[in-house]
Image (cartoon, rainbow, N blue to C red; front, side):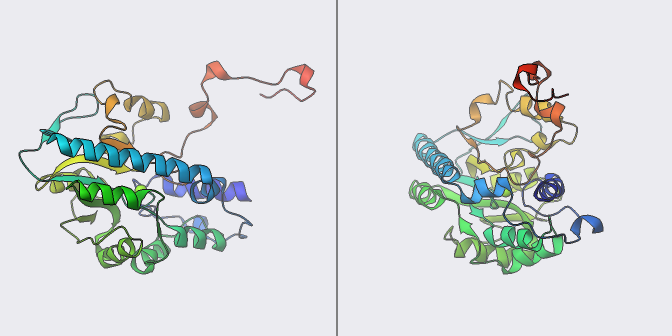
Length: 300
Ligand SMILES: [Mg+2]
């Protein structure tokens, strides 16, 4: 049962760009089943493990160090792709003397949604958009800052860099998201100036439109998220296979930006990173089966 729940959960969320929500679910998928006795393996790792906490603190320290160094350079160009460019042939927006900003996704980037994740799990459902909408409005105090984030944000602000949030939470729930970020200690945010939400630009759950809005007033020197859509929308093109999507991140013109302006935090629980069958995940050249000497039946 646990495995079935896990598959349903990730399938429902895989289509989401960033916030674990906007995709309608089928009635059958939303029907409650017997509640699992423990969280999924991905949730145990992400929200519970010491290893995850260490990875987060490592990454956040790297982000803070990068931003401090970059701010001291008074950069000429930021790290937001120009609208007419792509990861293969990138162009970057010029700073033009604008104040510096770092742009962060919210869910599973700045905060862990422990309240809603546990509620879904305990109810034995994969995901429900109405429940998530309720969470966006009422979850303040039940989401926590990701390990390392608060210290890093302090360093980033002390470097004179404005912290801006670009999330796929709904614009209609701006007050709830502002309250959630404040309660988690992330800071005070204002919709339309330091907080950008789904609905603020016409490209739906795409974030490039909002990145352009932010770039009208700021030179963005860092983009941080748990999904590639937090960096640039072309990474989430529906036509990309599992492998092609990975290869695109290795395009020579942008390969050096990872950890150097573009930062991704681990999320093994939901999102477009969670997909692929055995053939997608395991290259044919690595296929292996137990030998007869193992005493086990040979795998196909
Ligand atoms: Mg996210």
